Length: 306
Image (cartoon, rainbow, N blue to C red; front, side):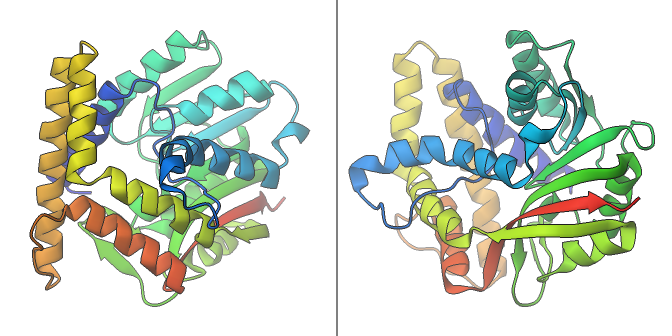
């Protein structure tokens, strides 16, 4: 992805973590579509990403792996999934993150968890991992594939590091219609693109769950959290808690990221709306696409063909 876009994206999320140190997962979450109480929004927003992780673990039967098995987390973010895989399941984890600014934060979190001998974080591209052939029993690909334009190369590399019979777990959003590129940072493939690339690389799709409705419900709460009052409130809260530098960095990062989204919306013919946050607008658009069937969010389990 272009350096300037990647930098703005990383700046926003790194600043968000600075004001909310308890934030672990940076991926989407699951919510019950029937639970729309406004008072439950903070709870749903906080619990959603962990619920997604747990659902993916059940799909992958992670408890069936032997302790000491090797997992590779491609697009590992701040290593929250790696820490959970190590702590809960006793796995040895190799995390891969292309965003250089997040790597020291991830390593610091691993060290704080006392897991530096069990979880390593590499600054590397998932299409060219610094790992030996057939080293992994498990590969995780959580909201990483939609950041990669060359999905064929990504799946070939994943197949290379997986042992025969090893499993790949995917959480990804794909388009039911034509593929779509957004801001040179999101590359949503047409429906079945990843499964086709996997099959050609020797990865057989075993099972799949469509969780679009639950993602869309969570995304509506996420959209509200991107509105101006919520962001101002979060910055003020952080300042009052003795983190004024983090508060300022968060507000600055969110404004820059918002400007990037506004530019994208204008390029697509969208008009500015008085008082409306582009961050909220983009997230609400994603929720509508998932709810209306224009996109879907799937959890997948693949197996490396022997």
